[in-house]
Image 1: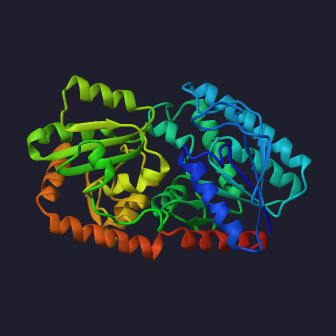
Image 2 (image 1 turned 60 degrees about the vertical axis):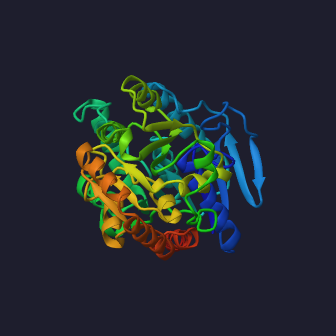
Image 3 (image 1 turned 135 degrees about the vertical axis):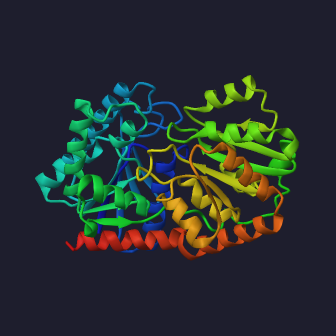
Length: 407
């Protein structure tokens, strides 16, 4: 079974969620599934690095990687992002037409126009495609207020997205909330949608004692509440900062933000302007120190802006589960994260935007170490039951086999 994966960013890129997820998944399947051979079409760019910094071709222990020299799409301007994404999509189509026919295509939602290339190729060559939805456009732009729902571009993109989804042989989503959203808003039949969550590395990330090197190196003590990851546009950081302000420095709680992204300057400005002495803003840590970082927390945060339900599932949630720490999630009840918290009793959901409730939840947890330990134990337990890479990869393997066989 020859599978062609298409993603703008891929190995050795470790800066974003999508390239890391796809690199680990394909590496595992290539090494463990004798019936699978991966080719990858990607770009010569790194997500957080110099453009055209990677070689055009690489054989990564059996995975053949073909890199296209196209403009980077992670640009501040929405128009420039769309144009760069379209350039990669067009170059991908040309590359596919010049190569031998694979058994199936495996594509993602970034850049947003990539499914158009897969749809055209599928119609020309009769090759089915599996469509992995990480972030759904134009819905995400509408939810963030970047694009009005009735804008001609939004309406045209929505129509095109409907066609791409229905043309796919199978659509893979990250949670039940996304499945329900596609069924309601795009009329996608249930038998075309497969729910396959993200995962974490069971060996690399394990429960550890919280007295870590990260705590020592950064002078952290007391009850630590951690947000680790990208500071994106569809996370609500204002509510977290409001809760930190309500508790104040005398509560014995330190709120730690570790990462980078579009909202970093906003967070830094609020910390400085409002003199939030109980909040720390720190850069990303190296991959080798990530497990130590997660173990430093007493509780970890997940947040989504209201309106982003069904448009994505925070991948950091599965790292938190693996670390054996409770999750405090500012999400809607329908979000996949909220459902798992309720089903596995491994954390607390707080209503989005309710800073007072968040402050009270953190205060309660900081005064209940036995409860924190119980919730963390449940988190690691459900992770081992459902969210390891071998389990998730087996589900993808099954989908690929069914699509390749025409079922």
